[in-house]
Image 1 (cartoon, rainbow, N blue to C red):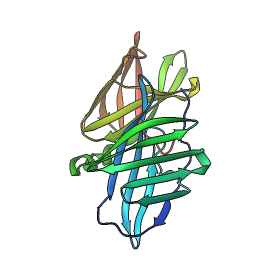
Image 2 (cartoon, helix red, strand yellow):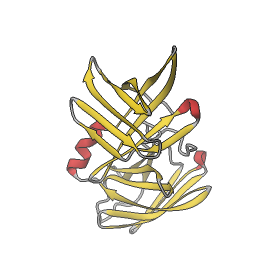
Image 3 (cartoon, helix red, strand yellow):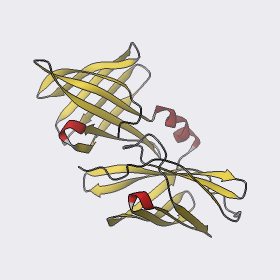
Image 4 (spheres, rainbow, N blue to C red):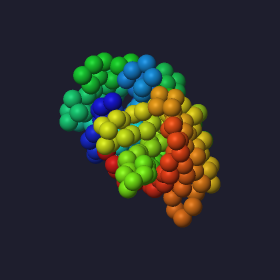
Length: 220
């Protein structure tokens, strides 16, 4: 699975003040294949003469992505990211932003504005990286990408050495002391306890293997 959004930055754009308030975090899942998707996020923050726009792909990148242009006319939002050869065109309706994201091909997507409870969970949005101990001094790097969406999480797993990205995680549970997940696609599961500033646990895929995950800076 190939990565798509791999740039970073921030765009400050101004336009006429609108009667509607579109500020907040908007999140949706960009469905790349029937069982494969990544989160696309748009954050709109009030600025002096309009809004500041930040584009996010939290399953791939921990930093905002740089849009090169944007317009908001009435309920219609458009933006482009020239460095990614990508653009988006959509329309607001209540707490949903429905449109099409195009990067090589056009993909429909609906983004939902995060509630206050969802926004608080953004503190748990993180990339966790570790080395899966295969035995005989061999290891395999893995990255767990935790992204927040309305009402829950969208979680993916990367195996950079195998050039495999966006592996879907079907079951995911996170608390202050425990982390667990499973993936039907690769028939694997993981359970860990929070100890010594990292998740210390066991990854099971045919057999049990030690895997400790630490907070990662931008790994993509």
